[in-house]
Image 1 (cartoon, rainbow, N blue to C red):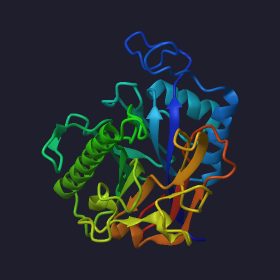
Image 2: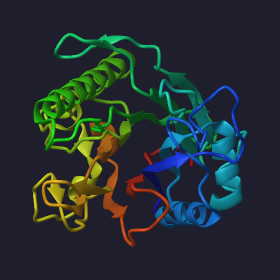
Image 3: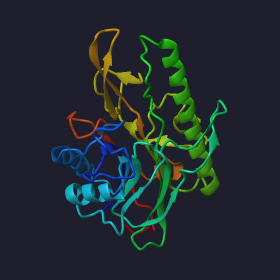
Image 4: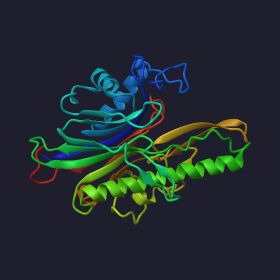
Length: 320
């Protein structure tokens, strides 16, 4: 019988618990961010997609805290992810209080946060990660070897307070600043990996909501065909005739649905795009079974993002 494992990434969009955190305004429905817990039906929808993926390792974005993730996992997902074995969440820099997390049915080793790293962007601005780059070692069943290292990321969004119709110059300048920060975050991830791992021989994956499409200049250090780590975007295996970064209709690789109001046309428009990625090192990609999927149908599934998974063979000599 073939030995396989699956990796997935999923932005679960504001996964807040039902308890008020007195030290955070991010979970206040009346505050600046206006966030509130999801109804049980939406939690079930997201958990159903996680179970449908049959993933062993899942990188998650937009978790309120460890407790919220445990409550969601044990109450909706299933018992294979245990608090003492395979649930991770670390506080991030995000002012809304949305953190990164990871679920694993396999044992975990070192967990490293890079939220305090400082770096310069291509335009010379100094930043930290808007959230974090969460580094987690996934171990073999006997804990004797590192199966892979996961780098879970959530880059700067394209959100802006400027309207492209009324304030086109300010809108363009703000989008340029956002892209510059995403480029800085991408470069910092490359630096972290080069400093700690051998990109040619170690198994690792960079995954998460990178808030940009694979063709973007900002993500070229990770997604470009000549990226310095030799990363391969797993979902690029999916056939897709349309190479445009956005689409009015759902395509196999699209991971995000944006319902936006276009003032120029006076109506609400749907835009699909791939902004969530699983970027595999050469050593990890050599184990690919060729199976991958974005579970992006039906549209209503508790989040405005869609879970992606990819499947791999277990390396010889590794127990899972």
